[in-house]
Image 1 (cartoon, one colour):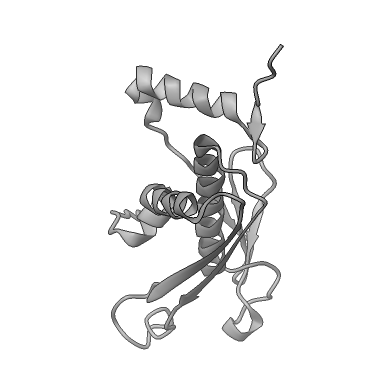
Image 2 (cartoon, rainbow, N blue to C red):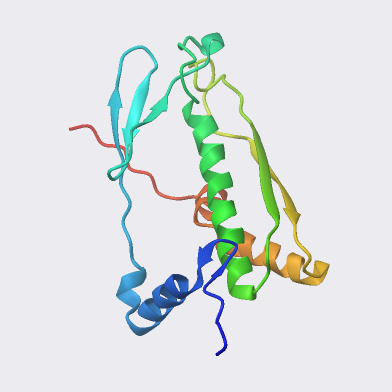
Length: 172
């Protein structure tokens, strides 16, 4: 009896395959909507409620007038990009049969506070973001280069940050 591997990189291969098959047979299953509800908690503190998880706290560092009780929104954005990239590496490595021994992603972004503080007009967001990926695997470098290219080409958060996305902010 031959035992078929059901997990690689701690990813359930069958579950990923079933999702791919479901979308290939019905493309409407690829269209998803995600949501978060944010509640202000006074000062610069707030929390995001996402699905049924514990709230995700947010605050500003003391140097920016906050209580420094949690990561601020721009730090969470960097974390979201890193987490998205980690999922991309795990998923694409698994599909390609590449075993990952370790994966680390260090992110940093440059942001000028002039616009945020009302001292200038212009772009209030990151001027640039750098994600440095450290990947440990026995796979040949060519395969790791292909994996890296695939992740860059398919990261939802990476694409959202790298391309102009319409954002509508309305008041009720």
